[in-house]
Image (tube, rainbow, N blue to C red; front, top):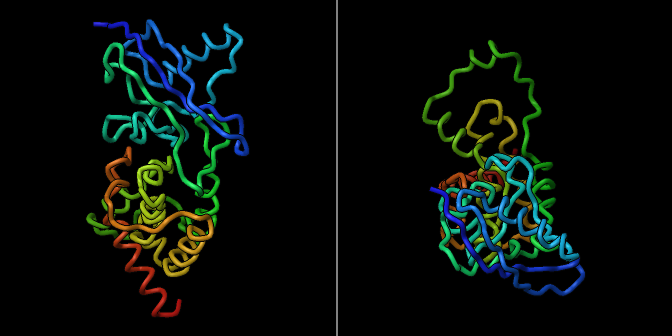
Length: 252
């Protein structure tokens, strides 16, 4: 059964990365409880535009929980109150009528605000450019299938490969660390034969770029795993740390 919600939104508004931001309060009346959070923002933006107020800027693309483009802190939690859910897949039925919802961007020095709820995630792209790929020839499908891979390793690699780079882990971490993201990208390649060849160079270069971007250090708070919409395990961080130590002791 559809329910109509009447909500109060406290939204972070910031003209650009050089301007000082502040919260603005808006009413969101007659919101369908089956609407997604982004659809609710669409409705609010349409009403703001009619009033001559600049719409709220927010990131989105696929709206299917795949691309990792969306993201905001909802009432203090990255992607909102539901576990393993991206912002675009968060539905308004998870809120109550007359709720006040505080919406702000991901907060991290390495994720500077571009405008309102939009942050610059290009630091992730630069980290990936340092090793988030394989440069060996993998051959065709029959060749790839001819390479035996233990199911335990294949499962671990696939679990790590689910990372969509949304940066919720960074936003949730009190140190704004990107260790969960980087370790997932390191793990899903290093666990497979195709990625074995470059695993020492990969982990060294990607960690170095992560530090250069200004992300914080991991202190095992576990909040990154809790905020991750894909449930990426922090065991990947331990795996990456072991590989990093090995690459530092044993020359590539």
